[in-house]
Length: 265
Image (cartoon, rainbow, N blue to C red; front, side, top):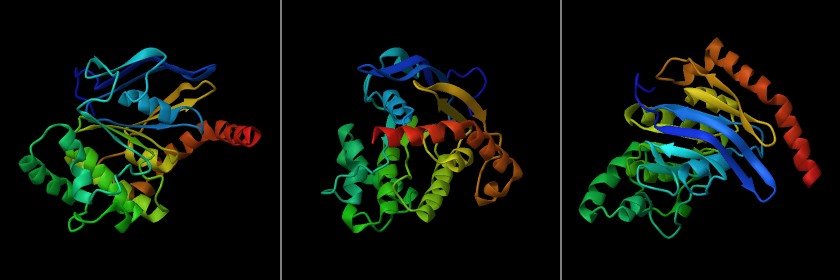
């Protein structure tokens, strides 16, 4: 969590995004502190991923502004890294070369890359697989590789779009606890989008609930569970209380979003 009197790492002010005549979200105001973990959750189609991509500078806002470390986020830049749901690995590159990709773009020397890459490969549990190609490893291992690539640039802000959404349930739980372990040792701000309420409660310091059409911040839920967190956290009565509170907030909108999808089809 951010220290007293420390400026927020991320500041989002009156943010809105429109595609043609369709307003995706509007009047989004949010600050994220240094080394804080914030989960963004909401019904399907509410603009969670769009907001995350705006934070990364991949797409522009229509209204408002996003500042990271006090500077407008108008395009992707050093210090901010994104982990995508579908891995985003280059199939013709090995694990080592995928992890090294961001470092090469940054102009880091080959000697330094060869020194840093093994550290981050080991950090995500892929030691011994450096020469493997993506098609030769499992989905969970591919996502570990994508995470290592992001971490290798030593970002001050790590953005994740459904980082475990493309893997099976058992692998997802393993990766959740791996990421918690890594975060304990890595001083970075994390913002992640998820459809899993349980994942948001387990990992977040706060949960930002988006609702409405266009969406806006309906509620910010403080997750006052002790850290470090492990599987025992899932058994805490307060964990269940927080999960039920968020689900109760989202239930009606989630059902309506399902019917809207059916109508559009």
